[in-house]
Length: 306
Image (tube, rainbow, N blue to C red; front, side, top):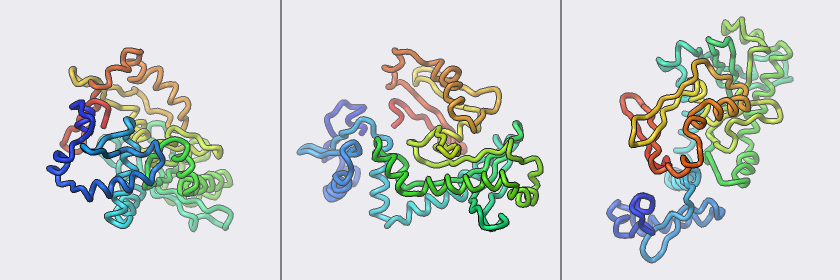
């Protein structure tokens, strides 16, 4: 990747790859995984001189290949551990951070056995209370091992897998139970006396970019985690070019996460895209830099965001 994008080379030479501890058998194993994928997802090819990137849009495609390698090495155990951590711990605990705990409160989710009767089978991982807007989000989190895949084949694979549709079905049942008055008892147990059907919204959070900013036919709203995380931080983002100090943008009010179409229009007209837009900016990607902070460490991503 570095050889082609930064050094204008046609491929990564075998002698350089070997210095990184990657053997010929490792490359052959990688190519066997690549050949099983559809043409748009075939990231790498090899020739007499080295390994070459075939697809210039590789973020999602690399995720797919890394998923295959992880399965090959760990027999799927690594992905199961990542999925359980993402669904059961990471997302809900994110809102306990110092910069967010004054704005949001995390409450335990609701399971089917808490609902009287057998008409509904809701499964809500946690309830997020927006203290500033007096809004409650009933959230179901889903992690799919392949977070993104090219074109319609990716959409179909995610839908056929049933994991997203299961999460939607569970939230639909939660909403129906709310409308029928069957959530009052579990909500009262949690002290959520102000929570009602008028200020409650049902949200599916996942790691699939194909279904970001999405309203499903059932009315359930879904977001990819990286997007909705920033939306809950009032759209906060640092952006700019590596040759100048990064710019900071953040809306002065909480954003209506439950209305993705309105959010798209708002961000396109008021966010960084509107500030930095124009035909000339299409040719400035080599200088783009995105900055984020994890713990006490700053991370800067230059160029194409690879």
